[in-house]
Image (cartoon, rainbow, N blue to C red; front, side, top):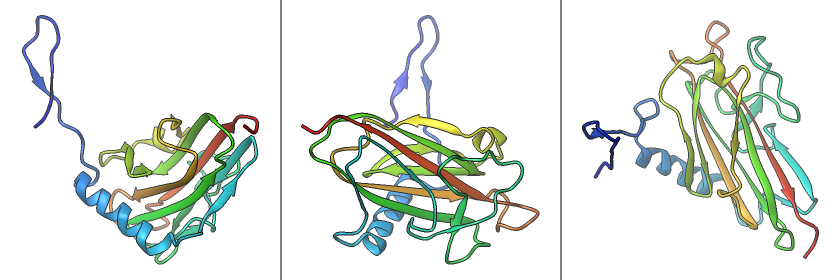
Length: 191
C-alpha cells in the first residue's frame, strides 16, 4: 500500500517512490544479495580500527576497474572513478566492498561522497540509501553528492553495493560513464 501524504487545505496526493532504470526495488535487492553471495566470502574485506578512515573506490572493490576521469567529472580525493571490470563498455556496473569496523570504537560520524555518471542505486547492509531515477543530471557527477550514512553502518561487518547506470546504453568515449565513491568514518577512542 502506498502511503498518502496530506497537506493542510489540499486534497490527498499519492507519492510514488521512483524506480531506477525501470528497476524495481525487489530486483535491486536481488542484485545486492547476488553480489554478496558471489564476491563477499567469509573473512573477506578490510578491518578498520583507526579513529578516522576513508575507503575510496579503486581496483580493490569487487567488480571494479579504475577508468580515466572524464574532464566533466569532479576529482574525488582518495577515490578513483571505476566501472564494471568484466566489461568496461557495459551499460551498468555493480561494484561492492566489505569492511569491518572495530567493535571497540563507537561510530561518531559516517558519510558517503558519490559522483556517478549517470545515476545509481546504493545499498548499505541491505538497506537502500539511494534509489535514483533514470536521468542525465550533471549535479550527480559535478560536484557530486554527500550522504550521512551513520544510521546505515554498524560496528562489525558492513557491506556496500553500488549499482551504477549509464543513460543511453553502453559506456563509450561519446557516452562516458563512471562512479567514484568515498566512505569516511570518524570513530571514538578505544572503549
